[in-house]
Length: 141
Image (cartoon, rainbow, N blue to C red; front, side, top):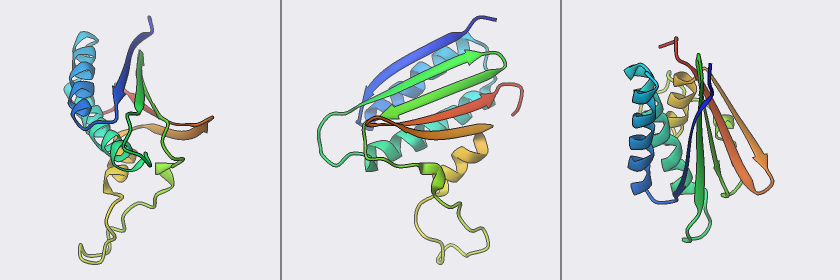
């Protein structure tokens, strides 16, 4: 089967998240992704891009976030890279479900969602860029 790719370059602005989801939705429709898979990726883009935009940059300048979606049946691979401070979001401890809400520390729930929605996930620092890779098998909802 062919390898199909969607490449996006977006600025570190919250309004860009809607554009990423819109372009991904069009890509997923063209390639017949099931709706549950599309919705999972929309949630993942919301979580990860919000984190990058909110916390990755030490200045108020414009930074480019690169997103590459690759579909080679039966898997979709997403790579997100940014030039923010080094941060492996997968090292964040998952929330403790045994604590009541008042005792739980703030944060970490979005990353927990990402871990549970994807089949595989990786982080690496390449030069001055963070690279997060996510893999979802289309046949698994």
